Length: 126
Length: 112
Image (cartoon, rainbow over all chains, first blue to last red; front, side, top):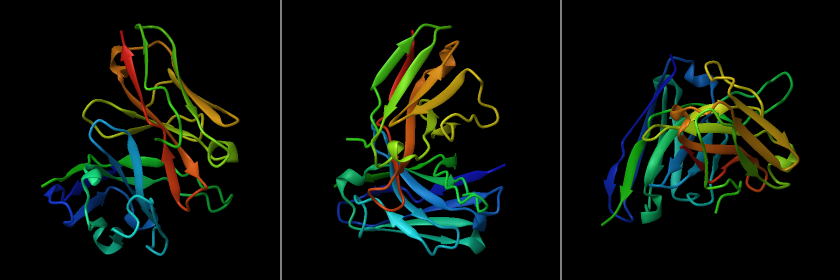
């Protein structure tokens, strides 16, 4: 059974830092691209960041570029999000989400999330 | 403001059919990228409902169906049940920013 379990959320002051983790199990983690998606209280979903299966390719939403860093440790089946210079508008539940793999034969990229974690709440407030 | 546009809310009585629209542009849905739908029950994480415009993952009832045309997509739910009350989000890929997945603002479905 695929499981994604986030941790590391909490209360942090504006300008502070936090590191989120996502522990993966039930699948070969190193074969999959991963993402972080967040949801502010009472709001919709917002894609935050992507990392390829090897960690070579990384992308960020404009709203977090230069402040957040995504990384992974395939040996430990773990995904991370280092969040620096946090702002009130970063307050949200952060989900790690597995991306369905692209088809190497057709070159088709589906670009969707087939499994999600339960989320971890990050609150940025003084 | 979300890149993909959804109605904030829809409602229907048990047994009825409802549809939720998702409108994009030439940089996402209109560029040929697939649309995917997620269901988020209250207090839970999103769950994949429809992928690749029309496909249902194993375990999703056939009461749920998706379609795509031009720059828009729709999610249809037939035989509405109380347990379908949830938030629904469409999602696609956008060429405006490399690697950017985009979501609709979400639609709250109320079963009357």
